[in-house]
Amino acid sequence: MGRRLFIFTHGDSDGVASAAITVAALRGKYDDIRVYFSHPAGLYGDLNEFYSSGSDLVVLDIALSELHLNSLLERFEQISRKNNLVYIDHHPEPLGLSVRDLPGQVFHDINASTSELTYRFFEEYLDYDMVRVALYGAISDYLDETPWVKRMLEYWDKRDIYYEAGVLSQGLEGSRRLHDFKRHVVHHLSENRLPSMLSELLVRALIESVNNEELRKWVKKNVVKRNKFAYVINPPGSLGRAAVYSRAITDTIVGVAISKRERVAEMSLRAKKSVVDLNLILRKITPRLQGSGGGHSFAAGARVPLDKLKEFLSRLESELDKID
Image (cartoon, rainbow, N blue to C red; front, top):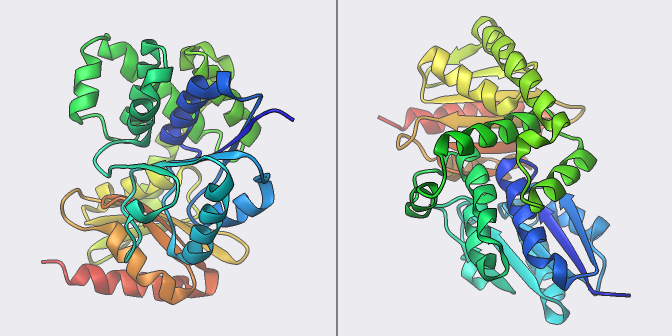
């Protein structure tokens, strides 16, 4: 059996672009590269289910959740004893942990996208043109004003770059749980091919744009305002977009979009920048509700048991009421 690499990454544009950059950098060093999509609350379980011992591991754009943190750190330590482990991410650290203490190689910076960090980490193994894949991820994750991104954009017509980033972002939003298709996108981008050259991705992007306009109208009719935040339940589309629309339409500090599943409430939250730290609030309140949460200060996610949703909203309201 030849050398095998497992890549666990987030399924959004930043995660997909980061995975594509990693594949492009390392395909000549491995006989088998496998890509899996995960998220903070599910990473520990996904590693146990899909990772094969004896393989190297790269984890990209996945925050470390308090939910299984100790078990996950033990798993990382176990893997790093015998194999290469690389962790690249830009989410804030869990409370009480420094990512510098993680086993393996760590590249972490909350001020840049994971795709930017991944390109910089593997730069010596990459064709320069792969920089535009990193730019797609950075733009899609609203981290396109870093010094590195500004410098790299000088070498391209940024209208082309932003167009392609939009196709990628919109197309992936319309492919949320289609993991095989997302793997296809990863390999397409790893060959430095334009997102718009993948016809299925382009069609999905166009459909998603139409759906987003309908979603905006739906939110306007169904949003519920509670003092400093507003929320919608089971929006017919992207939770992240619904959260943005909820906040903007009601002119509140925070917007919340909630998807009620069988036993779990899954949420996206969006806040006005520099007003509130969603990551800190969610990491504080969700563990008390047997849930998990976190992300960036202005864009984050959370999961709590469905029967704890009402309490979650009350705790969120209490935290926001402390803000002047």
